Image 1 (cartoon, rainbow, N blue to C red):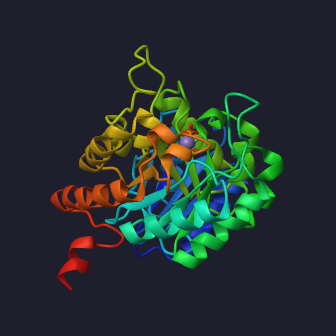
Image 2: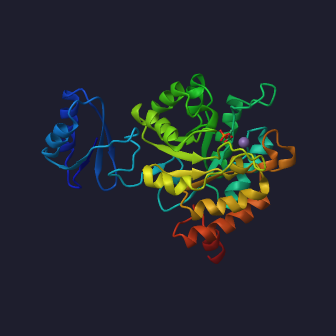
Amino acid sequence: MIIVMRTDASDEEIAAVTEHLSARTLTAHVSRGSERTIVGVVGITQDKDTLAAQFSQLQGVESVIPISRSFKLVSREGRTQTTVRLAGGAIFGGNEIAICAGPCSVESRPQLMGAAEAVRKAGANVLRGGAFKPRTSPYAFQGLGEEGLKLLREAADRSGLSVVTEVLDVRDVEVVLRYADMLQIGARNMQNFGLLRAVGEARVPVLLKRGISATIEEWLMAAEYIFVAGNHDVVLCERGIRSFDSHTRNLLDISAVPLLHHLTHLPVVVDPSHGTGVRDFVGPMSLAAVAAGADGLLIEVHPNPAAALCDGPQSLNPAAFEELMRAVEGVATAVGRRMPYSRVAAAAG
Ligand code: PEP
Ligand code: MN
């Protein structure tokens, strides 16, 4: 059930609603939007219709929406699109398209400083890079750990970027929180419920990637875990799903973007790098994603892709990324969206 408060509802009226809920041992999840406050209700109720009728009578309540879906707090019903803001200024879910870019993994100081400077210059506003890497083989490069996090923070601060980086294990949440502006849950951990609860208790936005074979419903239920634990700043990231065809690394589900905008109020980002695994397809799929309504892109960029320790074949070099950002701005403008740093405006002014 979702309780939609009137635009002029006072803090006292909202508090009265949450008190009535706790008196019935129901949990209230209050989200204050720019226009109105919505109270998501979680818990077992015997008679939903009676409860909805009772809450409709309370002062300041505009409507009560019963939700039959299994995902409730992330459901679109009764809600406008959520906006998620990172420390450092990046916005997901507004008019602006967030551009997250950087190497697959943090490898060294020169590699990361070079990547950060290049992506910022080309128009990105969030630096990505893994310090804890989810590698299929235990013998592959596993990341630099805390040393990598320190480099990410330093590079981002130097270039004026926010940091998104993956947290692989519940035991690492605390250390990643010391350096990151956004916690990434990777595809392989989408249903690691302990980790979802742990990042749900954090007060930093979460980028939740789609599981390798996850349905949209399973993905939204994973987001619901984070919400229920108290963190309402969740951004979804479509990164391709496993298919029967091996020409691309994954099958990038662009249709997930409009579908998710229909089902959920959460912002949606697309990762065409892992989605295709092929450098040449990253550009076209970035443009398709923005045309389909994506609220951001996550793109792997390496100063020297041929020497990358991880995901070189799908990484762009700085020149290709810069060229792509020009094209993305064209599509963004055509669909009424803005880039964090306009190259066109910069060139004109
Ligand atoms: C990544 O973004 O570095 C990554 C490992 O992605 P995914 O979890 O989507 O495979
Ligand atoms: Mn990668």
